[in-house]
Length: 119
Image 1 (cartoon, rainbow, N blue to C red):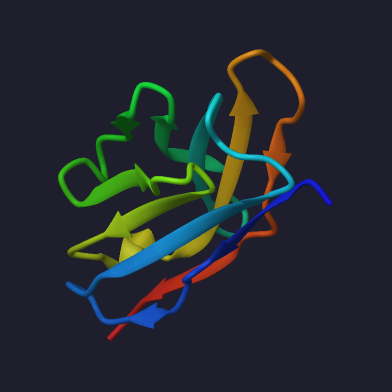
Image 2 (cartoon, rainbow, N blue to C red):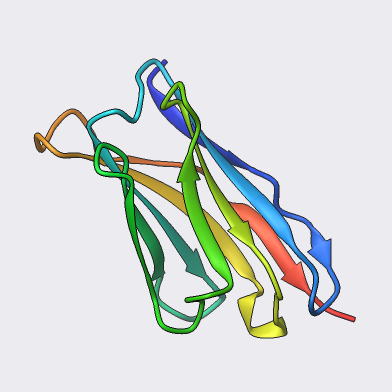
């Protein structure tokens, strides 16, 4: 089945780190843009980072720049989001989105993984 699955969410103290994973099943990310979004109750889903896998270039929203890093493994099957110096306002459900540079197939959304930053 073609899908993306996130993992790695957890409860962490402020200042801590987590690494989220977004794994592709049934395809690879070679010609995809892979984005990380996050959402808290009552708010719209927010774009956090977007990685061009083929170019290995990422962009970040200002609130996470310098703290979060998106990367891809050599097999182009897993995209990571390394999150350092986490803050309580980073608490959210994080979603992975894969959008083909060719426009199809997809896009694909994962089911989300919960990140909670609290002391």
